[in-house]
Length: 107
Image 1: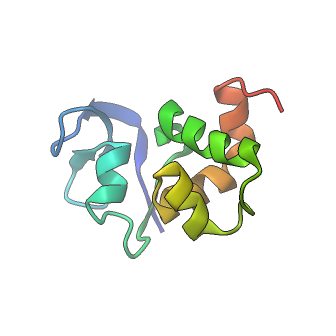
Image 2: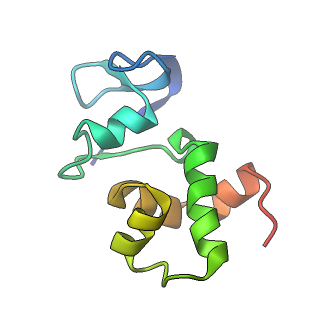
């Protein structure tokens, strides 16, 4: 499984935002939004570093989780309610404890 290099940052070649170096796709810089929207993870060839998940994406996930409206394992419904893509939701779930600490979320 290829991973993004967490030690180098630059500007995304697609949208120009801050990004991490993507060594799996010809040394392009790619941000979180473009990573999920431009097919970089379909099929999931690359595992993004947990530091690449934005605060805004985590807040959208948390808003749905705290609302109690749906089972958080129903990724389709979580995606509809949060506006996040399935792979991003799975990455947030997998790294939830780290992200909650990073973004200082109180349970």
